[in-house]
Picture (tube, rainbow, N blue to C red):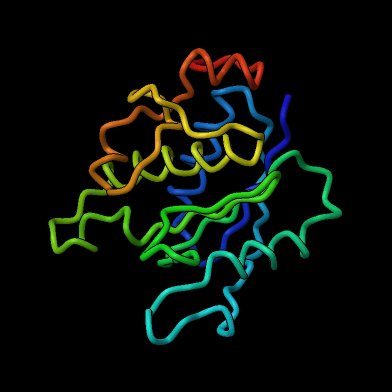
Length: 177
């Protein structure tokens, strides 16, 4: 069983954190939540873009949590992030460490009416997606698999929130408990 640590990059609603925790536990992961907020460092903020540098933040998370005994550490925050060469990222991961930026998963980011259930669903998908990367999975061609690549929030909506059979088998997990 994989051990996962969820860290809050910002002050998150407990409903979000508990939904993610429950979703991952139902998939067979052992999940702990670090209750302290890992505050986003102002030095990581790009004032011209109004976004956080995901590459630098990921390195900081890695340095901070590298001695912790987890298979994966996922930071989640109400923020917008970018990576070199990209306008934005929903998330970014390396082996063992991942980040998920929630701002663009909200309907109101696009000037639409707030939809909390859709926001939670998108969050589950993106956290699960980045978790897959931290555990060694690449992108999947199966359009229903959570590991399918998303370039827009509409792409996030189209895919499922679980790993396909092939990706589940690679991780040796029970996919849809």
